[in-house]
Length: 225
Image (cartoon, rainbow, N blue to C red):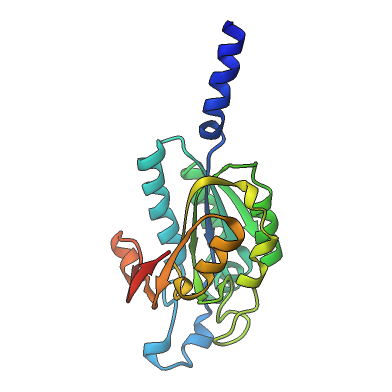
């Protein structure tokens, strides 16, 4: 009887014990391209907009789910390598240091395929929360934007590729949110239909200028699911 009770207890606790919180962070634009644009269209004057927003979210997660909540941080590495070279700073080393200090699992990704594989590598039912910080439009997460090519993306997760993500890695009540621009205008609908969990996204652009003040990005419109 005691053995049976322990098995039942483990079955109840298992989802909590394996729960993970995935944060995906896209890369910044290069200043050499952005400086050619009119001021109101420029992005990423600060290289760490998406990094800082991600670490603010880590604090929120640990407050909500406990100080030992398991966080998996998936960061698009190429953008930070090229911006590091442009600025003459060791940004990838700094990101790795942040991951160690905050006791999160850092997983570098180099392409959209890498990101899909990284998500699919998580245990069944593990992902309790999912957050994306980076450039986006209504159809895709733009992991790279204005880095290889001015005002263009060369690495992404498109809504047409969402079906390649294994929906079984998400908890049935997973909370997913994109903090990029315009996601709520199309991609959120495809996410829900393919993965069975809602993706909260912006209807309109998002603004990261407030993250330097310790605030989460805001939407110039509304959030939608």
